[in-house]
Image (cartoon, rainbow, N blue to C red; front, side, top):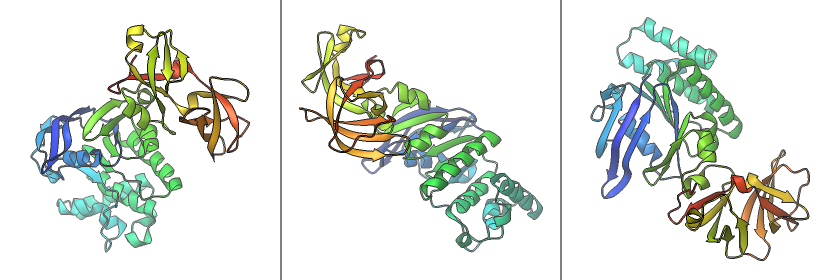
Length: 354
């Protein structure tokens, strides 16, 4: 296990700054997930930690040791790739033990460590198969096994489940969480899937354009986003964000709809530029409410429904999440009222006003 510290880490490709001075401490045994849209720098940051990319500035410390200029082989970190990176001509057992053989371990030690990892991952019966004879999930277990036998100070996962189907991703998520609980080793996990991030992480690092937007627990990211980017990125469906301005003790949304905000100081209220409400915090009523809306699109998910609606008389669409017993159809109308205590307000710079 190891604590990992990033101190002003930068990475540039030519004149393009990809990572712009990241400071981050990852605690010993912690499960941290990097999330963000494509191109935000999350995989690049992981590769910098592992040593597969050279830093352009700043430093990386692993378990109290400066590793910034060390090659990957000397950092005592294990990387698990999206593509599995298995040797097709080797059996699963030989793939798992490959790194140990290269490191000079004797045959008996290699076989012992391979079998221990296989039992942990429940793939003992697959050790003599080659990758072409394994399913996607089985190949990923072999790739994880290859990392486990090295007893690394930390595991680094680069979107390891993205090639799997939905049901298998759910199963592998649980297995990775159980693995972390079992071996209690530091894990850094990169994904674009916020469901993976929210369900697996001790803390989530939200990245945008090579910068950290917020680092927090999943529940705090959801309940207390620092800005409109985090608010709009965390949650499914995403938060509804509507232009707003203060009028006395109320907010005027989209130039027409007023919401009373007596619990917010006036000097804070007048800085408001955006109003936010999550789809699950809009109450539906067939007869009365703040906004009369018309249904544009319906997504049925069995236990709940997602609606895309348009506020009558305004060019403003909203996402609504409901587990109401009544299911509305496209073209139907109903009324919505936001739960004021669960709404958010943001200033001109997109920062949350509290």
